[in-house]
Image (cartoon, rainbow, N blue to C red; front, side, top):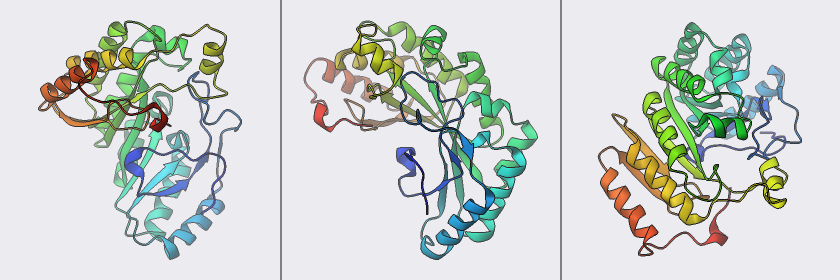
Length: 289
């Protein structure tokens, strides 16, 4: 397999075959992200993808999941994406799940029929970065979309029968009380009703606009306690019929994996213990992206 630049995948795709169908991110303007700043977005040729699949057919027969990289593989035009997924079925017939990152814009670019076709071709999970449900914060981080559009996009993925994993990012409001953004994020997540809710904690990435703003004093980062309070407010307000809560990313101060709503009380008790100093936090040296 050949990879260009930084290849990023969700923690739950650690054992998946990573197929780099695109290079970079189609949006690439979020102020907190520095992953693809120096990379121009492009779709790899079918010939390149076929060569990687030929390699995988020989050397990756034990991997039954494929994750399509990079930052937004759903941006690939339907005809091209269909060909890629058909090639996966042809060359790796043992693969039972294909997953990818998507954003509200790329989801909006697919019709309901398109999404249904992708589901039939093996697309089983879409990872979507909500970040926050607060429209003012979405503008501040240059997400390029409001909460309502993200909610509609997430609902359409679920309606297509595709599993939805949505990411929220603690700390975007900076230091101090973030209960209002947490409440807005909880509303958005509740309306999207994802299968998985992944919560990460903001870490300033060198070279990102937000890191530059912090360096000049224009952005004051949230403390660990600020983010724990935000997490508590978020967990307390999420209203979903069933979801797996994943606060298990390396960036998080307090790793948590739980089912909502059944384990909500246990999660809140654990967060309260951390806020009170009775629960140890992950050492700062062990936090990372």
